[in-house]
Every structure is written in structure tokens, then in C-alpha cells.
Image 1 (cartoon, rainbow, N blue to C red):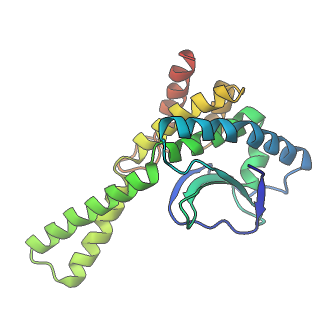
Image 2 (image 1 turned 90 degrees about the vertical axis):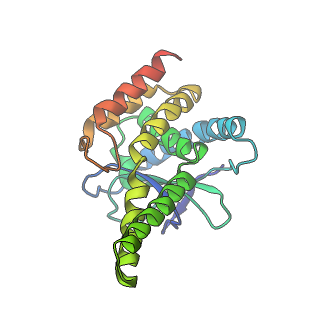
Image 3 (image 1 turned 45 degrees about the vertical axis):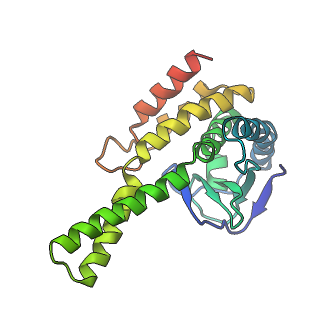
Amino acid sequence: MPLILLRLVPVLAVAACASAGPASAPVPESAMRGFAEVVARVEPLAEAECRRLTPGQNCDFRIIVDTRPGQPPNALQTLDDSGRPVIAFTQGLIGAARNLDELAFVMGHEAAHHIAGHIPRQQANAAAGAVVFAGLAVLTGGDASAVQSAQEIGAAVGARAYSKDFELEADALGTVITHRAGFDPLLGAEFFNRIPDPGDRFLGTHPPNAARIATVRRVAAGL
């Protein structure tokens, strides 16, 4: 799949893996050429793994780059209007990567979100949370406004309930994809040593960096 440069990234539903940090300077042409090489090697492997593990799912990944100036390092997986999986990188993340292994690992991780069905699973969790919280609001005598607020809170809680597990699942499968594409997932996971550690917060969206690195090492040891 050819690399596509876009001024604006369309987002419908997102499995985001942000690397918090300041916006970076324009990315050198050499870095963009390296990124194109990663796309050429990782996307076919990710597509093949997707078709093997989830027959019938749309596995035609579209890789895009958000070229808006000033965007911080970030990558995400989403779906377009037709349900086609989209993996988006900001130029900031491409410029922040120290080697192609890091870019390959991030791409494999984002592809793994789609293969594992994390977006529909997250949506189902959000819907279930909304129903439960709304039901509690009704039982306690809440009015229409209270029920609506409870639905919104329940959806947020439901969406986050298993997000840490989703990230570790994506790290594990992403390790496999990175390895099969000919890159080193252990070098790729060094990226976690340079981003803020989210810790083990209740209802946090991401697990501790140490847990993510341990997952990559465990899976890589078996490859």
C-alpha cells in the first residue's frame, strides 16, 4: 500500500498510542524515506497476519501521515467510513524515532489494534457501561438530565475498562509483526524508555512502560 500524505487525518473511532512530547521541527527527507521503507515492509506482513487471524475482516491497511505543522509525536489506528483500517502517524513521531525498528514496532502495534478488534470491543464496552450507569441513575430516582449524565460517565468508564489490556495485546502481536517484517522488536520497544510513564492509574488508558517492555521481551524470547 503506497504511503499517503494528508493535511488532515479523519478520525471516526480511535485506538491511539500517543507519545507525549513537544511538537518537533520539520522531518528530514531521509527520515521520510526511512518511514516509506518501513511501510513497504511492515504493511504486507500486517495484512497477511490480519487475513490469517481474522478471515473476512477488512485487512487492507491505509497508512497516512498527518503533515499539519506543530503536531506532537503520535500514532493511532482508526477506521474510515467504509470500515477500512487506517494507521496514522504524525511527522513528529517519525522525526522522534531513533531507528527504523522503532517505527516498525509502532506500526505493528497499531496494526495489531485492528487485528484484535479493539475498536469494536471498546465501543461494546462503552455501550455496556452506559446501560449500567443509566440503570443505576433510574433506580436512584434520577431525572432525564441525571440519566443522560450517567450514560456519558458510564460510556467513558466502559471504554477505559480494558484499555490497558488492549495495549498489552497490541504490544504482543505487534512484536510478532515487527519480527516477521525483519525488524528488531526489542530495539523498537526502546521507544518506551523515552516517553512519559503513565504508571498504573485506575482507569488509565495505557499500562506502565515497564509492563509493556516486559511483554515485548517475553514474546520476542519465543520467536
